[in-house]
Each structure stands twice: as structure tokens, then as C-alpha cells.
Image: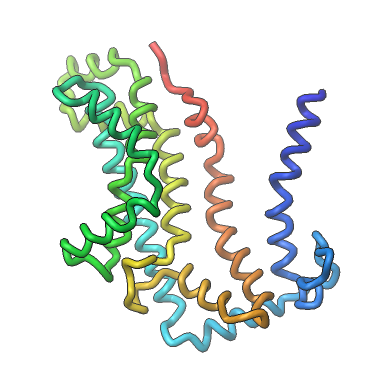
Amino acid sequence: MSLTFFLGLFGLFSVWPLVFILNNAFKPLNEIFLFPPKLFVLSPTLTNFQDLLIIIGNSWIPMSRYLFNTLFLTAAGTAGTVIIGSMAAFPLAKYVFPGSKTMSKLIVYSLMFNGTVTALPNYVIMSKLNMIDSYWAVILPSVGSTLGLYLMLNFMVQVPDALIEAAKIDGASEFTIFWKVMMPLSKAAWITLIILSFQNFWGTTGGGFIFSEKLKPISYALAQIVNAGVARTGVASAVTLIMLVVPVAVFIFSQSNVIQTMASAGIKE
């Protein structure tokens, strides 16, 4: 009983920011600037969303273009991250070859470097490849990150070797073993990777890699609206809610797989 109480208490602390963001989006300006702030809206209004639609309608670049850029970056980046990470993890998890242990250690060490540290090397590499100001300047560095590889590697290690041997006896090729044995058994891991990658690409602004306005994602356009000043505080609240809804919905529908992965609940011999 006491454990349930404490879990419920911490759950309330976790949900408080979401409730606050949801209510703020429907607050008029006078309520947003109240001090101390109120958690729940007193006089709900759609003015913030109406103002946002007016601003979007006057945009130089159609908002549909920004949305397309985000969808393309998210779809291509997420697919690439899952496919490349899974295919690289498979041989490291199930085969021993010269340098495999060293590579596994380097993967762990690479996790210590965050995006700020690797931003400059990534820019130099993309510049040498003439990919600056293109979708690939954002996609390729994220696809090449080792987080997805590390996640898939730790899950695939737990898949019994007996299943691979049985597939080989049946005449399955390496790709068939990967696609029809390893991937289905690692479903929880790659769904978790999809969620993490989706959140990363959905919120990207292009940073110092994309400069053309026609290639900018929707998060950049909405950020420019938010940065226009105090008068757009209400619009900023609406923008925050819109950008939050999609990743939260994706997580809610996939949370069971995330929990399974984080608990390392793989198949064991």
C-alpha cells in the first residue's frame, strides 16, 4: 500500500508539467502572467491557436513545406537509425572476429560524448562531403550515432545462439537470420529506438547544418514565432502544446516496449 502511495505521488509530480502546458495553451494573456501562476485555466479560450493560424497564414514559406521537411527528416532519419544500428549490432552481438571486443568497448566510450562535442567534427565531415544545407547533413550524423547501435547490441546479445544455429541448419542466409529471427525477437528494442529517434528528429531545428528557408523543419518555424516577443507568449504556449502532443502520443502507444527494453527482458537460454 505504501509503495503504491509513493509511486502515485511521484506520478503526480511527473504529470504536473504536462497538465500545466495543456492548461497554459488555453489561457488568455492575463492568466498566463498571473503570479503566483495558476495550474488550471479559469477562462478557457482558443485565442492563442487563432493567433497562431493567422501568423502561419502570413508566413513567407507555406507551413506545409515546413511540415513536409520535418516529416521527411523524421521518417528517413528514424528508418536509417533503426536499420543501420540493427545491422551493425547483429555481427557484434553474435559473431567473434578480430577487433570485435575493441569495437564494443569503443561503442560504450563514444556514449560519453554528447551532441555539443561532436557538432564541430560532424560539420567538418558534412562540409567535406558537400552536404551542408541539405537534409542529409542532419540525417547522417544522427544515423551514425552509437546510441542505437548500443541499444540493439545489448538486446541482441540475449537472443539464444541456438536459434541462429537452427536457422543455419534450415539453410537460412545471414540476412534471413537477421531479418526473420533477430529483428522479430528484438522488437521491443527497435521500437524503443524508433521512439528515441523520432523525438530527436521531430524537435530538430536544423542547427548549423540547414540554412535554406525551404529546407527548415517546422520546429524552426514555430521557434521563430515564439521568439517574436512577450506579446506572443500565448501563441508560444499553443506552440509548446502542439510540439509536445505528437511525441507524447507516440510514447504512450509504445510504452510497454520501452519498459521491456529498459528492463533488458530478452529471451534467455
